[in-house]
Image (cartoon, rainbow, N blue to C red):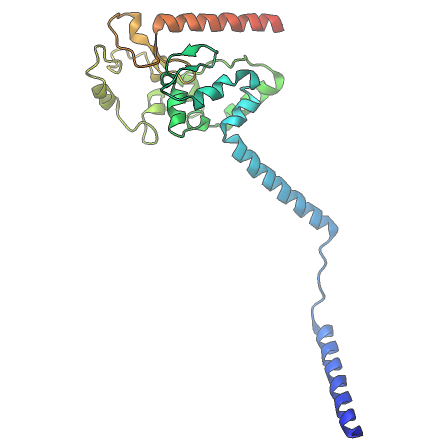
Length: 246
């Protein structure tokens, strides 16, 4: 009996020695310093914040919050307006059919601000400085195609007529509207560009009415005279706001 106890004890001793030898031979566990853990947490937070900010930056709500302030919710409303219903333009004027505004048409197709206002770093830096200093008009001044393509190295016509947007040539566009009493895409006035007629956040303008009184109107569009009156009201209002703030 005592021999069996000795054998068991000897086995236990051998097992204990083996475990001890294993522990001594194993590499010591490395401890992560508190400083490295804090730095790692900060990097992870900044990365998550940056990603979240970028995602928000791509939304119309970002534009309204930062530049198109709550005073100018009309900009966002033009994007979400039903093209076949009355709406209000960016200046607060009634539009017979929202479809007369490009923002409504594009918004109904699932497009958002960045589809046309593609970000360019130089432009955004400039806009950021203007926003911080308050050196901008409210409502914001209107941009034509010349301003939209300034930082993008693209032609004004190509800004609209390209493979990613309206994949059609000027000739093809002219043919589509050839049956109208006055073909607005005949390009016989080379000084005109798309944005002279097509407006994003206000009713589009049938520029042909400057000279012709037999022009067909798409739904929600207005004449050149009506557009001129609206622009004059806007400029006068802006001038009053500027003088009041001076």
